[in-house]
Length: 182
Image 1 (cartoon, helix red, strand yellow):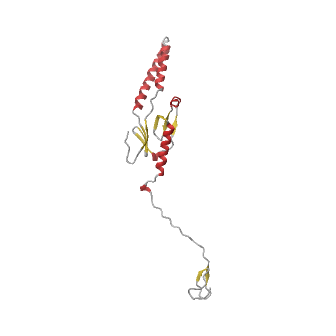
Image 2: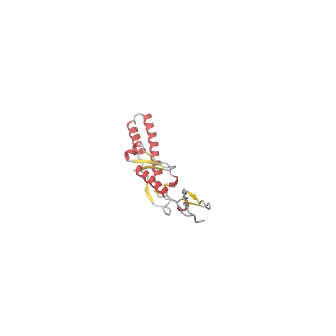
């Protein structure tokens, strides 16, 4: 799993819970095969099903054994794959019946999946909060100073001097040009 980057903090870390569905299915096939041992054809089918379910159980166990999940202040990491929070879209949580009974769920990010995570709704909320926090913090290199000028326009009524024709704002009593009373 990639390490933590500079100016990055780990908000959540976990790994998938072990899968029991294929082990339970293998046990069922084993028991049914033993009960129906008198019937050679049916027993042979259960032996094939038992071998298949054991193979899938073992492969699933070893595939997910080394999986690690992380949510940091800048990205989401699943084993060797990562997704920057800036590119995060919708987050979905999916439950299977057996996983719901155990309090587990799978979280789907854009291109990344956290499988069989304990308390998936709280992990989803941590990822959503981290995305919101990252979007609220402005990037210092991309901010620019915006200077806005405002022009205030007032309506001024001008009066004209009868002697020289100069114009002055209303309320003026003497012409500053010729000195006459307005």
